[in-house]
Image (cartoon, rainbow, N blue to C red):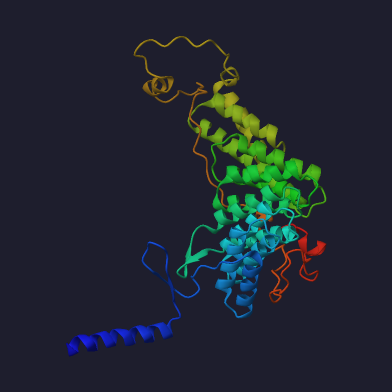
Length: 419
């Protein structure tokens, strides 16, 4: 009996000590067992003014987690109250101050979507852009202190929200351009081209349009230098750079664009010359001469052009001019059942004899070229949005208070310099 009493007293004492050290709450609900809720996790209720005051008090006491919860409760329970937009904006600011950047961005997006007439609309767009640039530069979400997730995908999501919610804002063109940057960094060239083209088409008068036009050329140009099988890449690169020089002749990237065009032209000539030599070595002289002539047409007077002329003259002496003329186009006879493809028939006949021509010879494998010029628009990212304000929390319970002019973006700060 004494053992039972002592055990009971120990439990009572432990419960008393535990309740003193942890100011937890016991929540009683009808028909359910009581729930144990940790401090700060208890449900916060009240009307809009009461919740706003709870949040303000929590901020003053340094309990940021409780302040955010009170602000969010206000928005959830009283979404149409005049205090709701200001509460949501302040919650987003606190998330950013606490380095919860994705939650901050989501809250800023919710503000501009749900309360487009909020006096904090422009500031919320600015904050989204600022956070997006952070992820574009490599910021990663942390889970239990460990970097996690693709920062570039986060950047694209945030910038896309800016483009969607503020299609005519001062950050929209740059946000669209940054989508292209993110996709280009990911190696998603097709998506990057679409993003850059959208900048050129929708924001032709914005300074960033010049950088987008340059990047269109650079992506195609890079493809021609890395062994692409796309024959249109060189043509697209040439067209994009020519358009860039026509529209932006005084751009700081104009000199590099001209240099790229020269490199592109020389690369095309070199490729044609290498293909001609390949056919020449395989004794497909008609095809070889076609490519030698292409070299002469592309860069007359160049070293390759002179060599091509000399080799054509040697082949005329060797196999005769008639053997080098383009073959007449004839209707293809229907294949007999069981016959081999033309490539197999050629293989069965053995190597081509001197003087014969075969226009169906395979092309050589494209080579790769790592001597790329610098990607002019991919220099270290420069933040173009102002830093978040660091002013102490306001005690004003009205959401209509105008923003602090000292923390508002100035035209100079919001300009989009060429990257």
